[in-house]
Each structure stands twice: as structure tokens, then as C-alpha cells.
Image 1 (tube, rainbow, N blue to C red):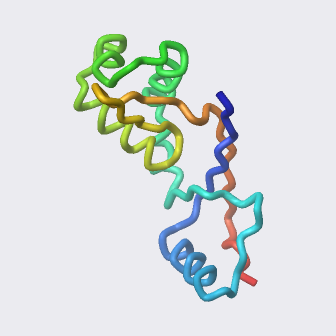
Image 2 (image 1 turned 30 degrees about the horizontal axis):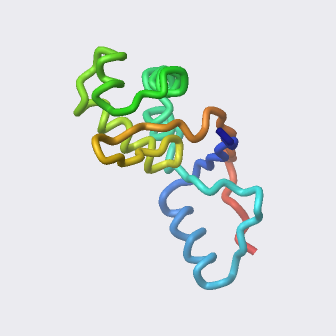
Amino acid sequence: MNRKILKIGIMSKPKFQAYTIAIAKGKYKPKPDEPKIWFASMKTLAQVLSDENQALLEIIDKTQPNSIDELAETTGKKSNHLSQSLKTMEHYGIIELVKTSKAVRPIVRTTDFQIECGLFSRQLQ
């Protein structure tokens, strides 16, 4: 499986809004190496990439479960709790939830993360 490093950026909501507006108006063109996934704070990022979720990613990567129910059996966690965590990670491109004829299968898409964070706002020129 071809996994990539997921580049993550941290930017406050007001700065992110200004960033996306500048892009939409053609005033700023993102560089190819800029993050594609943005979090409003380190706290939010920490919730998504918590120790528990990182352990879950490792289990999914090693066991390659055929369904969320199978993952629940392996981890001892309830399917509905897992589903919520998995949907959040899918939203950020960390995993993919593939619907099969019988179930939804979690697949890890990235195991490595690069975080871009700075004290000053991104220059929108």
C-alpha cells in the first residue's frame, strides 16, 4: 500500500478564513508543499491524534480488519465509539472507510505526520 506523509497545518479560524478567501479571490496560490489539512489549534490536533487514536491506527494497520465490528472485537471497544473516532480520522484523510457489500472496512492511509505551525500568520501575497 502506498502511504504518504500527511502534512498538517495549525492556523486559527480567523486566519484560516482569510487564507481561504485569499485563495478563492486568486490573491494567493498555495505552494505544493503546503499543508492540505488544517486544524484550528494544537488542542484539536491532539484530540484527533490522541494516544488512543494512534494505537487504534496501529491495530488497524497490523490486523487489517474487514469491518468495524471485527475491529471492535480486536480492541474490546464498542462499535459506535469506534465509528465516531474513525469518521473523524477519515475526515482528515488519515484513514478511509470503504463500504463493502457486507460492512464498512477501515483502511489506514497515512501513518506519518508532519506538522507546520508558527507564531506568525502566513503571508498572503
